[in-house]
Length: 599
Image (cartoon, rainbow, N blue to C red; front, side, top):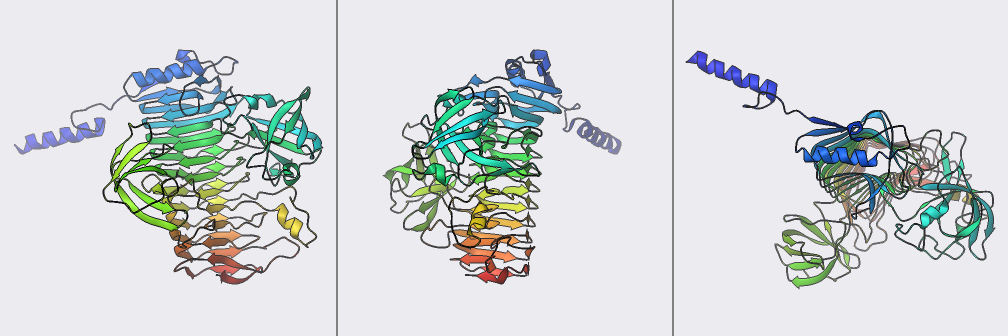
């Protein structure tokens, strides 16, 4: 009997070792779909898009775990009209389960429509993309030189350079705002080859051709053009180089939308007509070892027209071992949309406006008021009905207090990039903030922030000593937390530890937590900043407003300090309106700081 039992035990162990489960003696085989077998031809002018899309469709239709394989080479990929989200997309993976889109490490997907999204993973489960590069030809940017300016009539004439796409490309009707096609910024190239951008972007509209590659651009009314003298405010001058890009985000190079357990690994992006990576409404999404950079050896000054990693409304996200440079806006942006109630149906039921968010049974919504104070309360969702045309009909488990319809708003605590991890990333020079956090419960650790963004010209002339030098360095914080009427919930439960913030060329603090002058105080909560190193900063290294339970400990502030003619005497940590702050164990080794804390 004992021998029989032992034999059965050995049989079970053997089955587990070989097949991973009892009764399955062999592992599940993954099917391989090589895009070449469907007609894809790298390193030619042929459009490989249809073949790649056929290979993906066949892999999904197989109903088995599958790899779609792209060998070495550059695949030119045209776009198709999909009627969802971006409007046009090049490579679409829709509704897949247990699928890998795998390059060789020397695979390039060259998107041939400068106003199309690149790769889109949507409504998938256990899907992964890895080891390829995405680029655009033509590039969705224009390099030109200013040859004439008429500030009285708000016109600029430019000569297009470097064979980038026709400026009239940006008049394409797919651009969301037909009255404004271009957002332009002056720039110079520094000795180390990195770009130095102008102070203020200016919105431009193509007014007409003036000759071969010679264009007249008008400055229309627009939020970016705050005053009529927008040309002067932007510091535009004859002879300046001008980088123009699409203003309305026409697509992302790599999108991950409404997936479960999705992963982007070792993907490099050299261009995008909008965002580089767009993870949105995913349940558990990771970006590991990805690179966003200006294409080496090119004439480009941006890697992507807008944000690098724009994470919106995910339920857990990990960003790890990535390198980001040259983005036209924030390197990493973690935020979620505010949810606006449009109608009250009962004490505990509301209609919520349609938006780029989801609400599920069991979610906790935080109710906020922009006028009477910060948080009104937190309420659990009992049921959701999305079948109505006027928006989601949501019942809560309890009655809610009086609120201002159309003004007060909710934030979904379950869909706020919660439990995020931003780890071991390197952020280099780009035109925006390094990391924007409007999210709950997260960790930022072991990152290096090198965004020494420089400004070409001061927008205002002053006789004050050192003023112009200071204004040349005006820019954005490395790590930024703020409140917006368009985003919710409030940032809370974030730990920022063991990062390195290298010197900045502008008087913005490396870490800046701002309340945007909201009433109520204590808007953020449970923020810990510990073990970080700040080098060569020109201002206070931490500026915090309205934080409850802020901990600043064991940080090190070192370096030569300000490079301005008359450096100001500062506190290392500038805190105002904070409740129960704890500051201890920090090392301040810089002559420009006269004290550790001001409040």
